[in-house]
Image 1: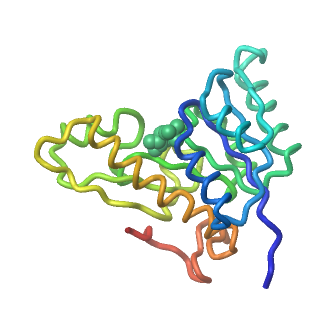
Image 2: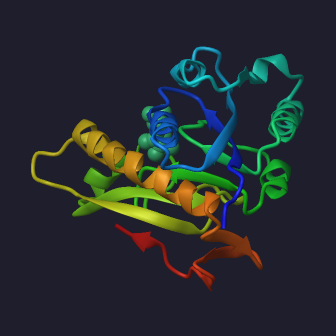
Length: 214
Ligand code: GRF
């Protein structure tokens, strides 16, 4: 069965290496998506340059340009709708979205978080992994729900913590794995293998009760 490429919008705040991994996968013919929009809350996000270089439309939707948080969320929601996105991919997007916007995209918004969720939600995950003495670290692709970094996890990559690791070395190793698993998870959605049904993720026609771990 041939499907139309999935219309996707990506939200970035910074460097955009995960966005680049997605753009590269698309360019290699490995990701059947149509990048409709890359939007940022910051005009200086390098991710916007990556999008322009790949010929993808960009937008800056800066909170300072809106009257308040609700208006900013509304502007962002309007941009995603106008882009015709069917999946929103958060790739280093550093702002918390309002519950209303998250609900509007229930089952159609993914995030990648640099830890083995449910461990270490929030910021500074590499430092916290080391402080906790964890032997295993990693990264998680999950659906976005109202609970911050708390939505169902679909795919994780594990990164062993080795003697001598510091937050920077862990960040490098985790990011390298992110660049593998994020395109893979998005491809699952684009190919219809991963779906949201009855309030949760389904993979290959079955409820996904635990993430796939690689
Ligand atoms: C990634 O490590 C991701 O897990 C986290 O933010 C970082 C974004 O990096 N959510 P980049 O902008 O994709 O390079």
